[in-house]
Image (cartoon, rainbow, N blue to C red):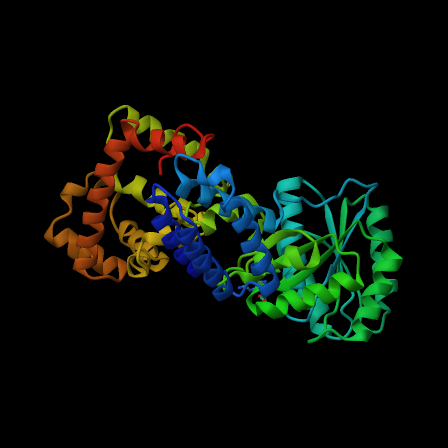
Length: 452
Ligand code: GDP
Ligand code: MG
């Protein structure tokens, strides 16, 4: 998300940063660039107008003009205003009620409601230690109920069965009752959507809302629909007292306009981003971190949180200790590093969150793709344990055997050995404290000894 916006804004802001003095002229020019960048990202026009007005008002103020580094100060203003636009801080789900807490999902057909029910169940189970029951009120498409049942099984949520001949409100009330009897913490009610906003659908979801009185009413919207997303969000927020928005398909949306407009237009916070089709692809929405990401400053905090969640601490410590004792980083370690990186969503997901990545040409980014990593893992998999510990042994005939075993070419094996050599050199520097010190400086609260 935000690839082109990030690229444009970082370019504009970089020119500003270099300037010792800001004049009305170069502020005007910078604001024009920012405006264009936002419009190109498909941010709604009234939102862009307000945003630029806010930034302009503060840019000509003395906090910016009299600052020793006015360019930097202006960038700070843009960042603050981006954060304000998206809603200051992350807004969590409000589930502090007498259980079961009821969550009602609303949105158009295909927006990702059913998928999001599964993602939320998993999120609540894994990170909040809640028990979850799900039920489908989508009686119009029998397959929709089966889809939820399958997903519920995948994420370990209790599935409350329903059939197409039942009334949606009756299903929902029975589901809540069943959850109450089983002492389940959260009930998520999946609903039907239509292709467009229509009065019948709105009447049904209003009826559900009135009967259930849910603590959370989440509007699910496909981020890739850009300006349309903003319009449907508006229609739903006028019909229902929404408590939050889930913006899905943010993974496929290079522009990201909806993420910047929804809050302003509906007054409702985005609570989560859907980042893929899998049930793990849900991220809490953090306006402050996203603002940094948009300005090309990266999102080190989210990266650290993911690392903390996904990296195998035991292995990390083992490796750190091994390196500290002066033992060298071998191919087995290399393979484990790659496996852990894959667990964190692959290189692409990592790179998006690193500062300064917007300056790296796409061609370079594409070189380090995840397929390449799988191939490298396969090559290492075809080596003997001795070869992994002592890569210097790998010469002509061994190389041919490894290539054949992993379905690759000898030059692939050579390339891997070269990359390994570079990585090993980097690890040597790192074990002297270089990288970990640098990361600590960046993140403020990075765990001590992560070996990446
Ligand atoms: P519903 O009609 O609102 O219940 O939508 P579904 O949950 O059935 O999702 C519709 C389609 O969108 C499915 O193919 C999902 O896999 C896909 N989808 C949902 N959320 C995301 C997301 O965050 N990213 C991507 N790439 N696809 C998604
Ligand atoms: Mg559905």
